[in-house]
Length: 255
Ligand SMILES: *[C@@H]1O[C@H](CO)[C@@H](O)[C@H](O)[C@H]1NC(C)=O
Ligand SMILES: *[C@@H]1O[C@H](CO)[C@@H](O)[C@H](O)[C@H]1NC(C)=O
Image (tube, rainbow, N blue to C red; front, side, top):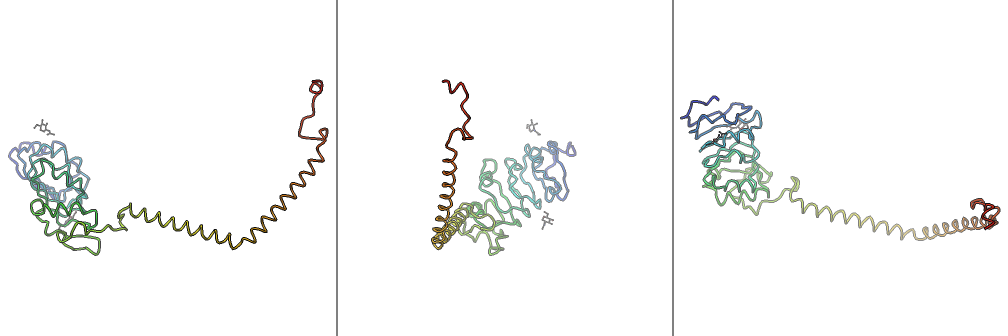
């Protein structure tokens, strides 16, 4: 309610205040607010969800969110008609394809955003953003010429606009393209299995005499066993001596 009774307020700077919570109607008393500065103000708590309803009804033209450790475009915080968005010095590695699409929504087509001092990661995941940047550069991102890669190491410090989207490689160590990696590991697994199979067959081949002898011994042992069984069976063939079959009862015998 701090802004109630300030209907002509046009610029509000809350930067460097460690905001912990924001009420949904926090700015409702300042309908003419056009510039809101929240630089380094969202570090104490994750406030994006709380800020979204507070900003929804405003006709902001400029929103400053520098130095807030943001990892993604805070699309929910961007009221229609916003013209300038300061996202410098955050933790953005890229803008994903879905985020770029949200910037093309009817209410945000006129939006310009500054993105300097973010740790942009120049791998293949940056391709959509780089393509968008090269097509839209000066109009949408005023500081595009100053954007530099923070990684991977070979590209650190490289000027983003000098790179080609199709030239950005996928870093295998950072996940890379899982599909290709998976195929490679399956092929490797198959080769290992084939080697094990070949070794097994070779061991069998080299030991063929031993195996033949072993089979022979086994057969001999079986035969001995069978003969013993046969002998015992013959001995027990007399039904009166047979222990497993029940002896016929008297009635059975009458039938
Ligand atoms: C937004 O504005 C509409 C009308 O302009 C109003 O009815 C509504 O209560 C407002 N919402 C908030 C959260 O201020
Ligand atoms: C960038 O933001 C961090 C907080 O996220 C802050 O400590 C640092 O001073 C900022 N740097 C500049 C140059 O504003």
